[in-house]
Image (tube, rainbow, N blue to C red; front, side, top):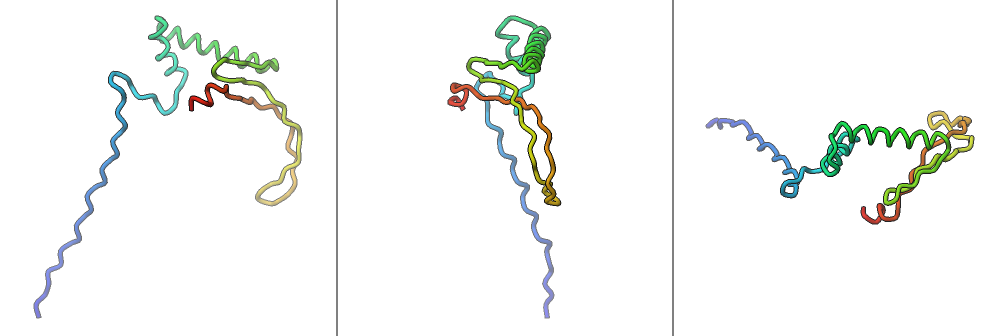
Length: 122
């Protein structure tokens, strides 16, 4: 009886990585998450300001939004939307693990309602 020589199974070729979508000529793709630093870098070029100065302006803008919301104000930014504080009343809830009824305290939350133009652009 002749013996057959066993050859090891062939390894599968490594999967090719999907090519990243190419950006338009001369433009960088937008990062997955835009931070204030990214906005400052983008805006500084078109407004003849340094990145550091633009970051300061944007940080002051965010601080002012926080102060206005803390006072109970409503912020309407044309083309973006409306930010306001909404009050949530105390209510009864359930512990999902035990099913036991628990009391949930009243709280405040920041609500954002996008502008019609923003909704339609997406």
